[in-house]
Length: 149
Image (cartoon, rainbow, N blue to C red):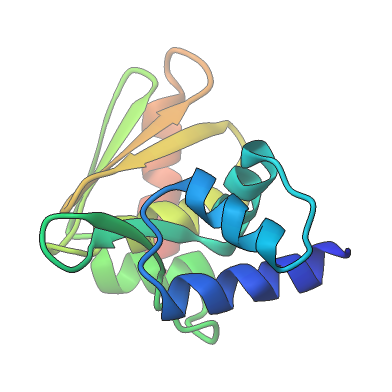
C-alpha cells in the first residue's frame, strides 16, 4: 500500500491508542494489511514528527506534536521560543521555555539549513550539531537573524 495511506493509519493509531513501541505499531499496521518493518515505521514516525510522551501511568507512548502549520516556519518558532542562542565549536545550544525544545528542534530539522547534522531536544534545551569545527558560531548568527527577522 502507499506511503500516504500507511502514514494516515499511523496518525489514526497513535492518536487513538497508547502505542509504546515501534514493534507494537508495526504489528498493528500489519493487522490492518500494511506490510511494514520496524525501520519503515521508524522513518514514518520521524517524518510525521512523532515524539514519545508520558501516557497512562509511567509508560511512554508515541504522540504527534501539535504544531500549527501556519506558524511561519523556523522564523516564527525561533521568535516565539528561542530565549537564548549560544555556540561552541561545532555546537549550538538554544534555550527555550519548558516544553518547547521539541518544537524548536523539529523546526530546525525541517528547515534544511546548511551544515546542520542533527538536533537533540530535552525539555527546555536544544543541542544542534553543525558540520565543521567553527560552524556553530555561523549557525548561531543565522538563527539569531532568522528569529529577529
